[in-house]
Image 1 (cartoon, helix red, strand yellow):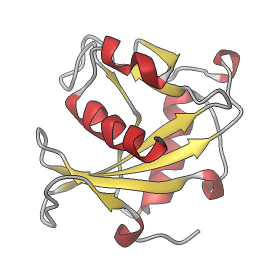
Image 2: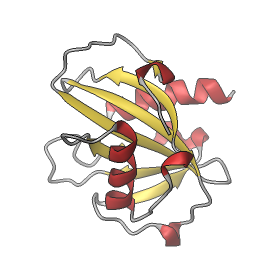
Image 3: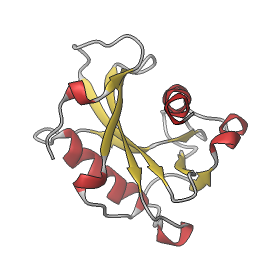
Image 4: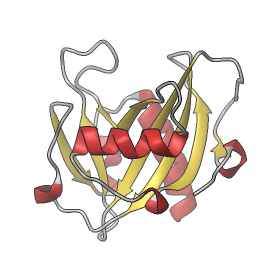
Length: 150
C-alpha cells in the first residue's frame, strides 16, 4: 500500500522541518469504540495521560511500516498494512515532530491486547472521551476524528 503525505488531512499548522516523525493509530472496534493506551507514569512525555498507540518512525522505515510495528510492539496485535487507513497529519504543538495518524477498523477485544508498553488500555466510546485525561495531541486528533463521523 502506497500512501503519501497528501493522503492525510492536515490538522493545524504544518511544518516541513521538524527533526522527528511519528506514526500513530486510532484502532476502532466493531462497536465503534476507540482503543487507547494509558501512558506510563514514569515517562517524560504525557505521564499518566491517555493517548494513541504508536511512536517514532525509525531510520529507513516508511510510515506504514512504523505504524504496523509500533502497534504490534505496544498492543501485541499484528495487523496487515492494508487495514491502516491514512487519516490525519499534524505538527505537534508540544514536541517538535510531525505526526501521521492512521485509522484501523478491526475486530478487537480486550483479550486480544497484550500490552507491551504503557500502564493500561481501554476501549472508549466517543461520548466518554471528555472524561479522560488525554495528551493534547490525542484530544486534538480525536476531536477532528469525531467531526468526520457525525
